[in-house]
Image (cartoon, rainbow, N blue to C red; front, side, top):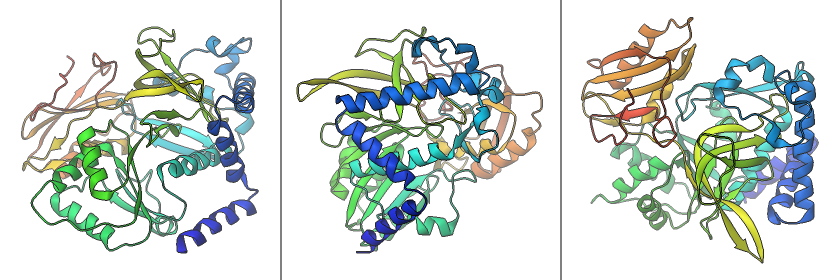
Length: 440
């Protein structure tokens, strides 16, 4: 009953504001329900056409492509290009309009800030509602959200209560921490969903396999794993305990939800309603054939204040063809996103690699990579701007999290090289089984 009331309140408030989220939601539903219908194809073509025309007429960067014939005429961009030409990506049409900053560490170890306009925010909200429903989560359900919380992404406590969000920091995954989390969930009989990094489910699996008693958690309607590749054994263990499917979501902070696995088919459904996704060769901008790994490049169809056309996400993926109802559909077969090692404090206690995100509060850092050399020695590789002055503060900050006896060295470099996979790994543990070797 309470969940139904909260859902009605949400849509009523949206209606009072012009029903913008509802309009986007209906559009997303229309496009994705029958992706091969003429109406769906026309809507997507129209969205792309409008975006490209807007970009070449209102942004200094894209004015260079004014005589384009198609999307292929636009250059592929990445975080570094946007950072180097930051002002040139801003649309003059939004100069005096309200904009919203979004912050991301970048899984490649490249801190990044981007701007969204109000319509983009509404589109993202509608995307979240649509894809949450596909996973079993409805507006009004309580969300147990395990992630890295900081000053950029943490809602005020009163707002978290209104949104019915239980914020649990990813840094707290000890046996005691998980006991408290599951106990709180077991005492809450309302419909609920869980969203967390995939690595959290690895820790949960270890806990659930222990000899201690486990609380019974009822009324879990959805579990969504984000940010990392989900291990099959962790998935099965979690599904057995909670009794619902675990769904993997592929998203990023700078854009939004790019794809999500279908619980029944196990296939990634690409969010063609809000993005155009390409898989390009690792070394050229040529598209690769289905079944071949390449760079995931997306065009954000709804960010008009700072257009992102053919944006290299830094992730590696593989498309395949799915046959359904006599039609062929392009699906995202695999996503190879960030790859991380766990970090150990000087006292031997394991902590999340997302602890490294504390570096985001310090300005003038282009790239970073954190390396644990042994039990007490750590190294931070930094690619910084000339204005960088935060070295001492960073060392002090990391000692607080790793131990007062931590020996932290800073290594200033011109670039953080890619791994052979084409990814940058921003956390490496040489002390306990890091699999990827550091580049020298």
